[in-house]
Length: 493
Image (cartoon, rainbow, N blue to C red; front, side, top):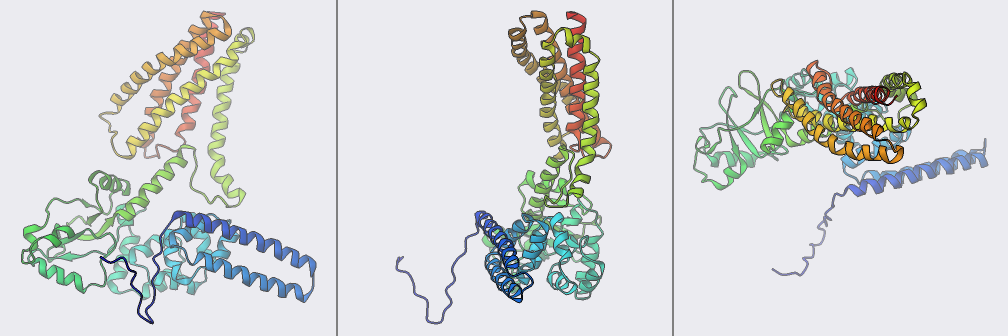
């Protein structure tokens, strides 16, 4: 093969390949922040210098247009996902200002990519016609994703432009609860009959403008749309064209019900390394499919929610007004304050003991802290196991016993180190023995609660991660102080 570059014919457009890079979004964000800051400073100086002067308005207008052009040239050259990242990283006023400069061709994709908490502010800044234009080219499942944030009159207007089939799909998608398979499935898929040849299937595919995204298999259905099997694209390409679909289709396939949990669907995709899976109703009819794109979003959202839940938080706009953040954070902080107060109250009941053996005041925080750390390790493991469905009523007690055994072994080793430290700074073997005993007991309590708290919350239909660490800290602090100071009172006084 020759390495000589081929010159394009005269008049032929030269297509320069564009490489997607997450660092582009970071760099673009820094450039936009610099422009917005410069615009704010320059306009303030111009207004101060020419206050109540027509030249002030003229200068401000020229500078404003210049900055807008700079922003447009930066933001509209990015992928919609990168634009969404930038908008999420700006305060509300700047976010809406930049959003107005985003090209209309990106509106639909950006609205679908941006997080829910940021999408609300973007939609608020759009007028009726802009919203209709943005959603008019979306598929039914995509419109359903935005339905909760869109004004009712916009949804009604968009429905008028849909075909009867698309309108029925939209109504169906909007009818499924959030966090179910029905809420994330799409309706674009390729279906064929089992009694046709592969050559017929290939001719049918060539007539399509393009295949739906993430198409790795074709669904084989009967005349009632009941799923009979799947035909992978690789099988279609390598088998003889005159073979029938029924001869080469796979009858081992995963199906999902629209009311299944999306977390369960994500677990199935992870377990079987799937790219797509069919969604069938109670009669076995194929009504949609779920692809790896939606599953990745589900996994990411669940991971973020779990991380926030452990701190007693819900997702919020980091640039939202202070009072909005206060409503999100205050409840569990108040609970934490109450639990910490109870722990302090427990410690105060042993004032005489601590006053006579002052070194206990320095050691008791170690007991409480190690117990909490032990419980948090166990709790993290259990919450993860609950998320993937590995914890059941039949193995819950076995998990408790296992964690207690592991913690006892770890605690025995760790308590020797803690006891040695206590003896080194106090010179008392009795204090070291109390330290060792209290530490093992509190670690066992932390491990037991680390298993039981998330399991019980899950059993009663609550998020197992929500505030669990606060409850665990309350128990390990209060009981840690009680055990350590109680033992010290009994054996050292």
